[in-house]
Length: 183
Image (cartoon, rainbow, N blue to C red; front, side, top):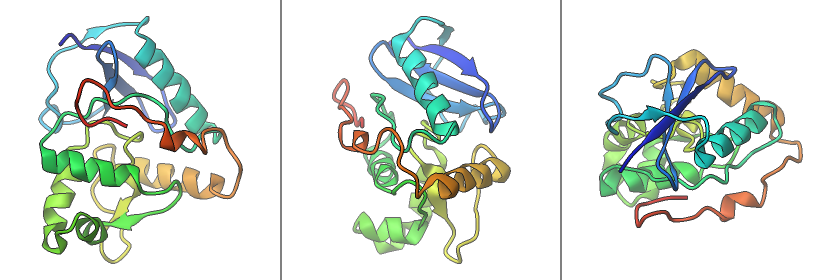
């Protein structure tokens, strides 16, 4: 499948958006380790509708006007990884969860480290909110975008949590794309 990409500026640094014709495949950080998310090569595009819509919704999110994203996702990973990423999507805006809690919710309380590894391979940063996962003692733990970016994303959400914003109902309307796990 041909992939296209676009790099955008954001308050947490440059983000590389990668999409197919139908869905978002990745949101990568400026200094992302290429081995963290393996999706293949992409060509630059300024006209792909998925990239344009993702950029628009991210702009709203950073402006504090969006809590949920309504972009079709094509999450590429193992079944376990996709289950973890689905669990990340269920973490409410402005809240955090621990790796152990996610493991319990997935029905495997001993899998906290595996949940952490799958979270670290999340290809769609911010939209699949891995920044909302913290260590057992409430401590901020590793994040592909860096701990400063993680702190900034959490602070943005905490600040805007009590305000009404666009997209409140949109979290329930994500779509499945191409038979792969998408929201």
